[in-house]
Image (cartoon, rainbow, N blue to C red; front, side, top):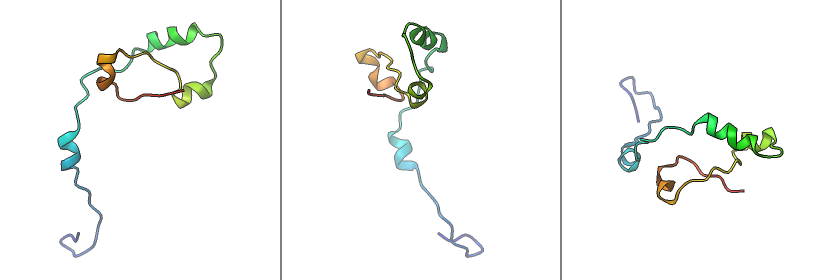
Amino acid sequence: MKNKEKIFFNSAYYRKLNAVTRVDTQSVLRIDETLDTVAETRWCSTLILALGYLKVEVAEDGVLDTSWTAQI
């Protein structure tokens, strides 16, 4: 596209993406529940935590409401 000064620039239209995106109505996981889960393990490396491999159980009806999933 060109602007008023006839300089080319990149533009992105997100209308189609915004039309199909569902708004997140759920809050994030509670940190105290996550820390309790980690505390019950014998060991948990920071690499596992940093990469998101900590498996958090999600009810079947809540899968669509989660913002991410991780598989080990």
